[in-house]
Picture 1 (tube, helix red, strand yellow):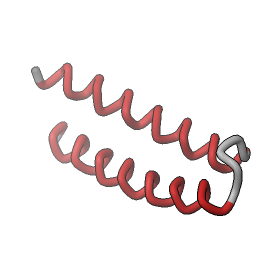
Picture 2 (cartoon, one colour):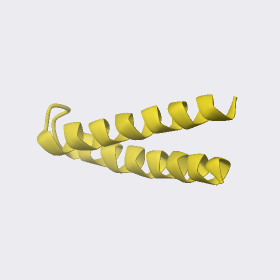
Picture 3 (cartoon, rainbow, N blue to C red):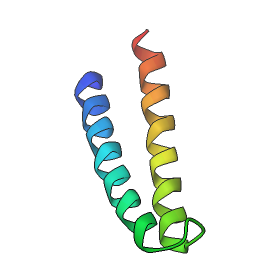
Picture 4 (tube, one colour):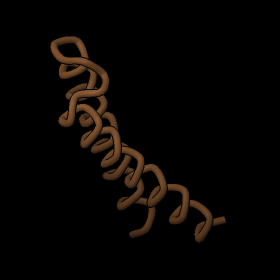
Length: 56
C-alpha cells in the first residue's frame, strides 16, 4: 500500500514538473504560478522521502 502511494506521488511529481516547465517557458521563473507549483513539488518530494524512510 505504501509502495502504491509512493508510485502515485512520483507520477504526480513528474506531471507537475512538466506543467512547471511549460509555465516557466512562458513566464518568468519568479512568477507566482511557477513558484506555487515548485513548492507543491517540493512538498510531494518530502512526502516520498518520508514514506521511503518508513519502508527501509
